[in-house]
Length: 247
Image (cartoon, rainbow, N blue to C red):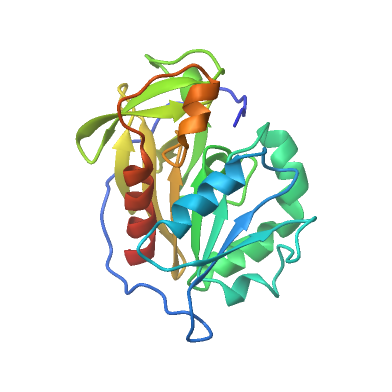
């Protein structure tokens, strides 16, 4: 979840939507979704993402991948899935050190038509400095951006405008996303200072959905941090899943 970096100016760019059919299951059966679980994540983060995916309308067969799982992140496993999800974790430098050997495999999977979902650290890792280089731009710390409404890296709440409606989400030093001028992407949510909190963008024949806060956070996350909200953000997480699957 924590990923210190220096702040950058944002590039607003042009946002567009592109149409593409949702992917079919490679085997003709249930759609397989792979969720990373390993040293580049933190306990509870992969499980929350898996719960979100299982609760979606897509009927995913959700499987964990990682060094201590039955399935590894590999060029053999990824083509059998339609979606790869990278959950929250710790430091970006630490996470990328564990995942950089899989960079080309993940890029090839998405470029060939796969879907990538990144939450917090998974959003940072979709960027380029360092990361998988899946975005038409890059990422940086929201707390270091101009006029940020959150300035400390601890567990807290952040307000976002999700498709124009104000919502409050769990937040722990998540990224904002900046786009190159004329980048083709759909901005799903923004922070109060106008920086991008969630987006969907194409990469080759595939699609990437990333979010800085944690719409997948379960009630115990809020309770453990002493945070109180009237409504969790799971519906927003499901909206992001639908957006990346139907783009």
